[in-house]
Image (cartoon, rainbow, N blue to C red; front, side, top):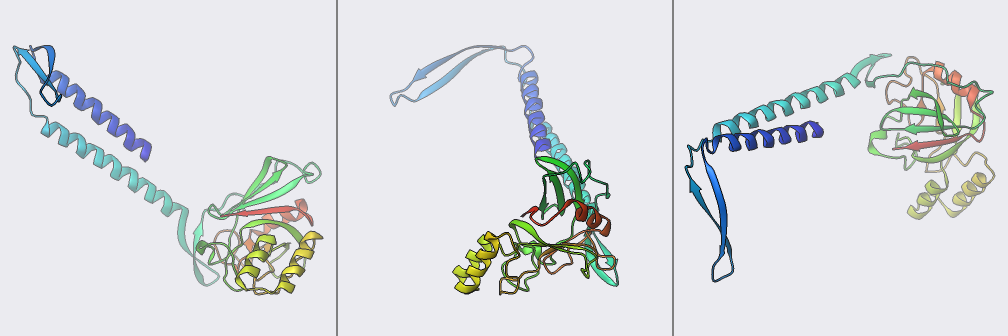
Length: 274
């Protein structure tokens, strides 16, 4: 919309410039400008004119251009609002009403599990998007649901219903999950633990335990006031990746979970971004 506004402004300037050039005079010959300076050295321009024609009032033309520009901006704003409404809408799922977002179609990654030997995952919370990489190449993208309070920011403590943000790794593979299948993440990480210690949320002993587990590539303590048991998991009934419904986990469609299960292992890097 900003680009459209710039284009409209440029058009308005060009139009008014043209109007000025055409209407100031029909047979005018503007002679040289003679510049003089007064005693205060203030420059003044004095124009000598010959046969200056009729001057036209551009107020009406200017108003028309302003009105056209305002209408264009209004149309652009209405189109943007319509697009946002199309992307998010209210929907009843399993007896409750949720704000849902558009889901990407579930497709197989562009590489087989045997071909993808350097898999990592990046979750963009704002876009509700999980991207699977092999090295630096994108091989798949899927829609995700997040913690129900994730719009308020990153996870800070147990029970805040926010999805964390930061660098993690898969530390647990759970094929007995109550949400189909789940990949446990190494939350809290070192930054989370440092924050918790500094704020008095966890003790020095808890901090040391978390850091020792992270150094060994193991599951950190999930049972401190920082919270834990953050997973990438499948559906609860019909709730999956179409809305934010979890207590902090990343939720996907069960078909997506089947795919991730084949491509991920303990140690797979998972980055969660705002």
